[in-house]
Image (cartoon, rainbow, N blue to C red; front, side, top):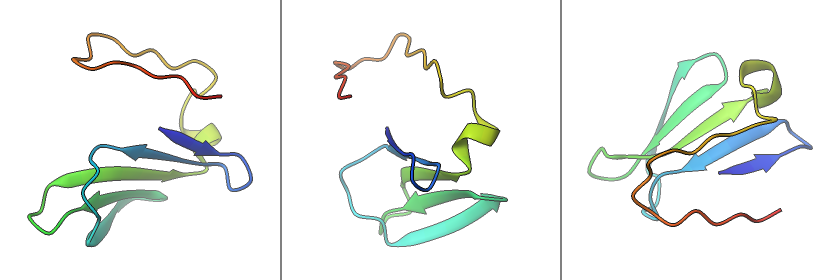
Amino acid sequence: MNYYPETDSLYIDLSSRPSVDSREVSDGVVLDYDAQGNLVGIDIDQASKKLEIKEIILSKLPAKVKRVA
């Protein structure tokens, strides 16, 4: 996840594959898809108004969590 305070947007990377198609599913929420139609990312504009981003809880992920501040 990457938060950009200058634009108040949050991007959630779900894959390293490049995005070739994007679809806005609600106001300011865009889903990015790869060439095979797989979801590869989620872009959320005005994230601080749509999400509680002061605390993020990650639970039971089958991956290593890396924090970069």
